[in-house]
Amino acid sequence: MSRQTITCNNDEINIQVKSQDIDISLSRVGPQGAQGPVGVSTVEGLDGVEITDVQEGDILLHDGTNFVNHQLTTTSLSDVDNTNRANGSIMVYNSSTQKYEATSQLQNPDTSIIGGSF
Image 1 (cartoon, rainbow, N blue to C red):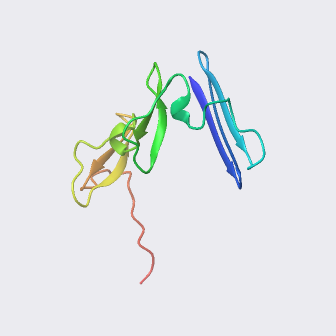
Image 2: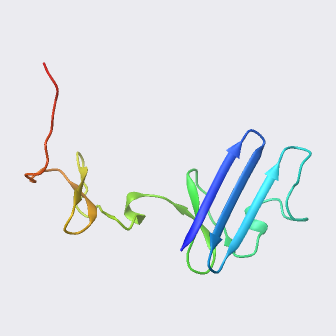
Image 3: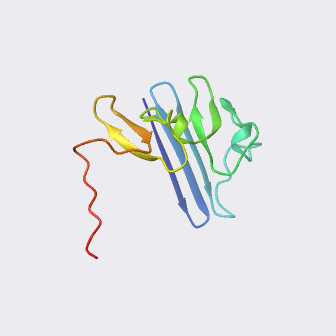
């Protein structure tokens, strides 16, 4: 189990990841402040970090061995089943599977759609 905290405030970016096995703390404070470990100017320079083919919107994800960059999509979320996704699909929670499922048909008697007044 790990806990990640990322804070951005003007010239300060702080990333903290705490786990039973891993404790990483990175910080960069202002143009004249602390600049991190000598010789390390990017996360790629840190042990246990493998960055490849960086894309806009990537996140850092621990794969059990290293922190790797990852494109976050609904396919990679453990509580989402988008097997039936298609044009016009919506996500509906299924309490029997405990997952959000992609569907283009609402067939649940517990679902109400309130469209307002016309």
